[in-house]
Image (cartoon, rainbow, N blue to C red; front, side, top):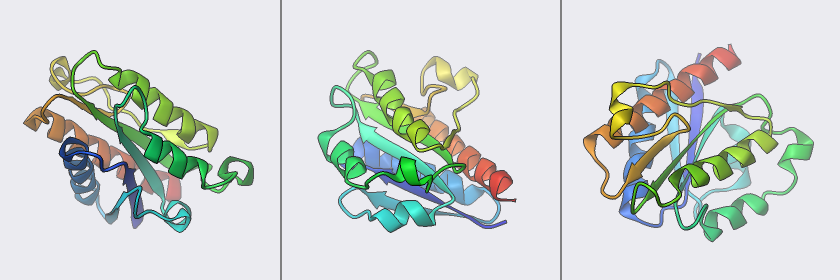
Length: 168
C-alpha cells in the first residue's frame, strides 16, 4: 500500500538537512513509500493533512528552534480536530555536542506528536547506538557520521513500514 511520509524540519544548518535527506532515503527503501522533504519555511498545513506519517526535525538550540515551534503553533488546533490522530510519527535532531540537550529536543518534538495523537516510532537498540543515534529518534552530535546517516535511514524505513501497516 502506497504511503507518503512528510519529513518536516527547520533547515537551519547543513547537519539537520543531511539527516532529513537520509530519513527520506530510508522512506523510499520501504515498498510503495514516498517522502516529501519540507523545510518549515516552505511547509503548509495541507502537507500535514495529506501525509500518512510525519517525521519532525529540529537542530538543538536549547530545545526546538523558535522557527519550527512558531510554525507548529500556527497550524491551529489540529489536536482538537483529530486531523493527525492515528498516523505514525518520529523525530530527529542535531547538535554540537553529545550532552547539549539532544534528548530534550527529541522529547519536545515527541510531545507535539503525542498531543496530536500520532503513534511514535522509535529505533530499536542496536550496536550502532554505542556511538550514534538514540532510540527516541535519529540524532547527530557534532559532524554527521555515516553511522548517523544509517540510523536516520533506518528510522525513515521504519516510519514508512509502520505507516503502511496502519493504513492497510
